[in-house]
Structures are given as C-alpha cells and as structure tokens.
Length: 459
Image (spheres, rainbow, N blue to C red):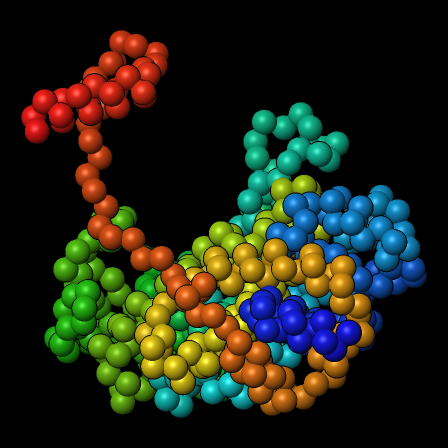
C-alpha cells in the first residue's frame, strides 16, 4: 500500500496534498467530539456526524454531482437509508455547522503558520474581513414550495475571513433568508479579541456594533460609513495624501450611544473613478490610533474585496450551494462544509506558494485554482478505489508542524507547468453582426469558402 501511495504522490502530488489536508482538517474522532459538544437536540445513532461530513464533502468538491449520487456510490459504507440521510442533514443544528467551520480553521491555522505563508497586512493587528452571503434559491422539492413562483431562499450566513492566512475563521448561520444581517452580529462581537481589526461594508456600520467592538472587546474596525450613521460632532476635514484610487482626507468624529461616547476617525477618499453605484467618494469609520495613517487605512479597506474574491472562487470551483437541499439547516450545513473545503484548498495553495519560492524559474508564476481543484477532483476516484483508509490514518493525528513539512515534501514532485494560471490578453471589441439579419441560419462551410476565394483573388 505504501508503494501505491508513493506512486500517487509522485504522479499527482497536488491531489494527494488535498486529500491529506482534508483528512487532517476533518479528522473523524474530532468531528464526532465536536458534534457531542455543539449539538443541542440532535443525536447520533447509526450515522456518525463525521460520516455525514465526509459524504457532503465529496459533493461540494465535485466528486459526485449530488447527495443522491454520493449516497449510491458510498452505499456500502452508510448504515442508513437515503431518506434517513436527508432527514439527518435537515436536522443539523446551525450551531453545529458553525462549529465545523471554526474547527477546520483551528486545525489548519497552525499548519499555515508552520509553512511560513502568513504575510501581515498591519503589524500588531490580526485582520479579519466580515461579509454576508445569502444562499441561492433552491429547487421546489419541499411540499410547501411546489406552488411558489418565487425563489425559495434557504438561509444566509455571515462569514469572517482571516485574509492573512486565507482561512474562514467564523460562520454565523441564519435559517431566515430575509433576516437583517445586522441581527446576526452578536456572535461576531463575542468572537472578537483584543487587537483584532475588522473590515466590513456599510451594512454593518451601526452604533451598537461599533461600540461593542471598541468598548467591550477592545477590537478595532474599518467600516464604510452608512448614510444613516448619526455623528455627534466632527472636526475639520484635512487632506492627508492619496492612494491608487483617489485623494485621502481625514477628520476626527465623536459617536454617541445613550450615555457612552466613542472618539473615532472618519477617512474620506475622493475617488478618481466613480464606483459601480455612481459614488464619487467613500468614507470609512475607524478607531485605529493615529499612528496608523489615513492612507494606510484606505488601502486596508480597499483590500476588503479579498472576501468577495473568496466567495467567487468557492462558487466557481466548489458546489458551495446545493440546490437540492431545500431545508434551511441542510442548506447551511452544505455551505459550512464548502467553507471547510475552501479552507483545505487554501492550505494546499499556501503550501504550493511556499514551495514555489525556492524555484526561481516559477517563483513569479500565478497558480490556477481551477487546475488545483480539478486534479483533486479527478484523481480522488482512483485513490478511493486503490487506497484504503489505513493509507490516510497517519494524517489524522499528525502534529501541525510535521504535516506542514509533509506538504512541502509532496510539493517537491509538482510539475509546475500544469498549474500555470492562464492570463488572457485584452478583450477584442465585438464585431457588429449586421449580415443575414433576415435569415434563421447560414452555412459556415459556404462562408469559409467565400472568404477563402476572396482571399485568393486578392493574392
């Protein structure tokens, strides 16, 4: 078995890195212990929580197109019927899903640190990016949905990304797809630590959240100003310099909530180019000390789009929102497993970036997320058939530092050309389609022949 494992490690090292990282991050006994801690009313009998996570993971990673297909492929390993599986998924409590995401980050964070892949955005602070994600409308399979013309929303989630590590550190789920995002901020405040720096859009610019972060948690924020934010008093707006996007100004402000007062800074960027909403300036409210200058704050907020890119990647390369899971808890569970899988691929990418630095010929080469996920997806089937569970068991209890070294050793076998990101050139203008407007179709062969004849005549 070791010889077969080595052949996979030599021929498809990225797929082995991904599978090993998945085994490390979602170690079965740890997941079952997590379920015992987090579950309130749900219980385990025949179907273990770790088994359900494994099955959902192969779906979100694209190995199987649906939960039903994964169930048929893994039928011999599952002690329950398909109906019981769906009922179990529909009963996973939101707190358990939130715990799963946090557990994956806790397992993988030390690996990232051991790799030496962390590049601090702001010395002395731990940057966290906060944003919300509404799950896409599901199929109308549930009886209560069959006569509805509107798209059924199975829920939403707030996500906290640690961009320096590339890991999702926290998820706050909500079964109500129409609930206000601001109503979910309590757990975000509870999870904040001293010297955390939160970057967020204007949806989260509310006094209660700002005061809780600054006064109760001793944390910091850089949040775009909402038009309805009441400012008690403001000082003179002074020019501070410029960034890549525009001229930066700053003023001192005072915020008031009941009998409490919070002194903060208002950073204004007068944009060179209006935003897609037509805004010509942007204001950021922050409680960072003045030693962090206004231009640095503006640059930090501009990098908030890291989380938008993260959401785009998991939507493009993973099945992060399973349309067949109509029950809100099942849909949120699927999304939580997708976030954990994204953390796994984040570690694989980090290990590849560190290994790439030692090879001058590819050090500056951009990596393709698609190529990484596609190899993992296609090779996994072969590994499932040939390698048994014993081949992966050592990764379950491997220390983080040793696992990081193992990832770098596997990366030595990578053929880097296979993972080069395709960079397209500038788009050509679209040629106006003026000919044959009154015809339903034309013969391509005849047009090619006519063009060839015209070219020959000119030659």
